[in-house]
Length: 325
Image 1 (cartoon, helix red, strand yellow):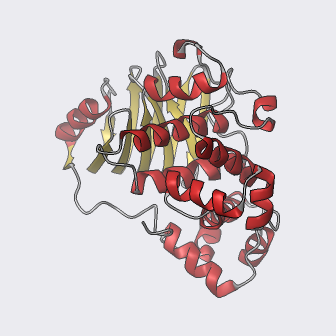
Image 2: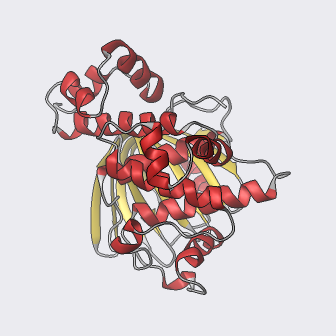
């Protein structure tokens, strides 16, 4: 399992490549609802890795479209890798561009909006996945009562840790012959969802409290470590200090990350920090590449630029330039 690699990399083969009515029908079928797509769609490419309770999609639409969709049968989180989109649901509108994450659709939640030449990674989570995570927080809490007060991440770091987790799991999701590992991976992503988007189950106090998980100590350790990384990604956080915060040895922390995410804690932290640099370059909070990199602990310009290109398929200066266009 490589610990780096572009999240923008297209799959070797797409499940569908086409345009026009064929593309509209394919996407309606793929997402289990009527999207009512209009506009000059151009070419459409779609690929899915379906793991039953979870699915990871890559979708390219080479045109400007509008949609007026019925509710989807599951929760769908979108990471926008290119282009711009606007989504309206529950009387709220979110406008996003490349690098952003949002909760696009939920149960009983129709939505409308537009997209312009988008490249999207979509993560679909069924009620089963959300229920497993919710019951670790509130026993016997019905998934139908889960609601979100915002459809964008709580903080930039929360969005970065969501994308870092999906980066890893979408590349290395356990196979069907490892049911316990698959269950742990789906629970991890369910918990990451609840920690990323404000909701009525996981409160601010829950986020500050030690993680409770009677079934899997290393899974609980990993979730605790992810919380610490979100809170302290901008600090000089060493492996020893991260392990100490989690109440575990560095070796135990390494094992937890290897087992559940297929990477080291420091590789995960580095990916979150690279994502935060990209956000800083896109939102204008840093005016130079060097300033943004330095804020998040990257002091070797060459190594930083190489890691950035590997993850985002572009130079950091190109990202900064697009923020001013």
